[in-house]
Image (tube, rainbow, N blue to C red):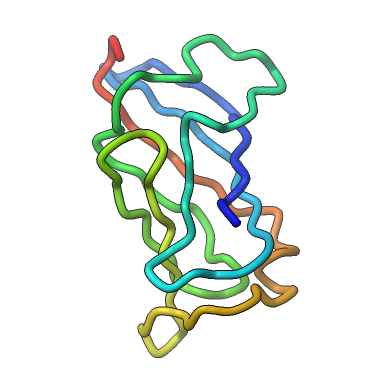
Length: 118
């Protein structure tokens, strides 16, 4: 199941656009990473500029889902980025259900960066 994303903030300072998303994990972790569709993020505060038209330059993950290491892998479009998770031994998690530590972690955020004007 794709990662549910919610827009938390949009910042357009320092010649960059930074969008911060809250990430919520549920269901199963698929081999190769869980899909993170940036264009499907909810925007409950109706923040302007929350839906850029192109892939970000960089996406950082703030926090460790359930204590796992994680990295964002950029896709070819806004809909097919992946969040890969790693165990403490630096090996990718195997396919299977997320544990309660991952699904209950409400402090995981993504910070995506674009050049200003996107």
